[in-house]
Image (cartoon, rainbow, N blue to C red; front, top):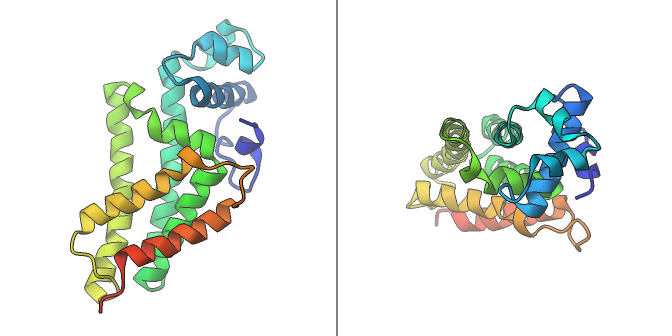
Length: 207
């Protein structure tokens, strides 16, 4: 992964991580976890990628799992902010759902390496940390479910199973992190627009 993925754009994912050494270790951990998987990655691997000694890692993070938790927490906080911001906007349910999907997909495409770690290494967290992240995921689900429910209530959407449809929408968006290629033919914005259209077709206008 190019570290540009972690530093480009107006919303730098790791800007809240200080000091600089701690941020470098976090970026290195994302690269290593995405490339090798959490369990196959050692603290020596992470420190080496950051250009630091293994001992230096423990100054900032007590364990490898603490690193994963920090990555996962920041990523899920960002995802939740995107979805709740879209849900709270003015406009029709269709407009807000399209906005939520566009923002969520764009993040998973632009930060695809980070997103793969955030979304697919959940089981490596401790019970306490996993419960914390699951609660954030529940809130993300609730934000999208709220938009779809309002669309059903106003007659914009024809959705007999709101919880199941919410899960399908979120799963569709999250999967972008698995396949997106920055050198591919579509930009993150283009994928976001495409997926927003697909989701609106999924929920369908009530006839």
